[in-house]
Length: 554
Image 1 (cartoon, rainbow, N blue to C red):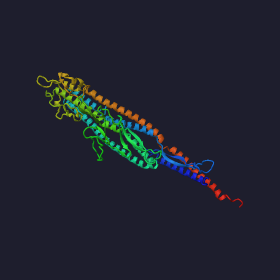
Image 2: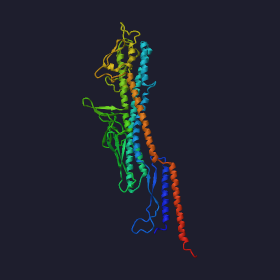
Image 3: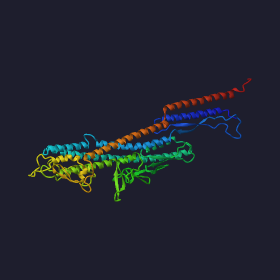
Image 4: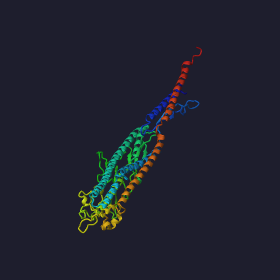
């Protein structure tokens, strides 16, 4: 027979469950602005009906409900949207880091402008044209020296500035490596905590949120793959288990970053440990980055064909900007190391340009005559190592010994051995260097104004460029920089838009809506009040039984 107080118990359960739902609603509202928080809900479950099926069950017309209970507190999240978000996140991290690096380079090169290298070269060529009109004029000669000094200083400024930014990117790589290792440790720690809670049947929703927030952050640096393992003991069917996280490279290689409560820290092969934590977080002091060390695995940045095999993300973007190296074979089958990257490439191009400019200028200058009617015995530009262009942009400078009278603006001397008055033909030759075809120069002797001849051919060629002119090669360098920056900015914008779209979809499922929570609050409050009212009604009924029955005839 059903209990007399059955109604009270049913109503009490209703009050308790609605109260729990109100508590969860309050938790959601409190964390409406918490980063990474996922809204939670109570899963209402009807309690077991009375009587349960058995041989000796009481004979009543049917089963009667016994109320409701809070089955579980579950966070509302869609894992597929997480997967999409992380996929877009590493793309954005990659392109954003490239765009940032290229933007800094554009700021340094500052082209087109009145203060860039092209402007300094233009003023230098103009000063030589002015000198060709008045080759004996001391003022015109002084201007040429000053403009030449400005050109060499501009080369050195660009080289030093680009090297400085490259060093800063190297430091940023170090910070990123430390941050990645910190994230991996935190994820493994959270995994451990989850593995200690889930076996008891609980759902550690706050730990789930923290872990997903960390994985989201990690996906900025790498393309990661998450595998889920169930905890031991008796976990809830809704338990989300333990995350194993793999780094996935484009070549199909997968490397464990996190396995349960363990993680593999990453380091830079041949790098240095800046803080003594055992992780080589800084790039090598000699040479560029060749590989990463993940646990006991070496991950080369690029293969022997120069194809980058590292996972897309912010770290790869930074390494490609800073520069990386790989080993390949030359025609003779010997190992050679190649250095590639946005900043090394720009430094290399500037070195080639400075070496080509200085070498041609010195050669043409030597063919002329100074005011004493003699060929110059000193180079106009110094700091250029014969046959090796590396470092030329950082070293090129105007020769300190150069004076106004030593400037060889003329192409001939008269019978007295004095420079011909008004002869500024070599100044014209010098001003035309900007347009000289490099392919002709390295092919063989080239005739100049005034019957002068220069020969920059050789085996190997004396000039690092093999085509174009000084101006066209510089325009090509700036043009490529502009195109690369434009592409990086466009793809950054596209990636940001896609990630935002996915994030909005994810937020529509997981984030807290204050309006929705208000509605839930009213709904649960009314249910709570109704359960309380039900207790009042049952109480009145019991009062009639206890105090109002058996009074007939009194």
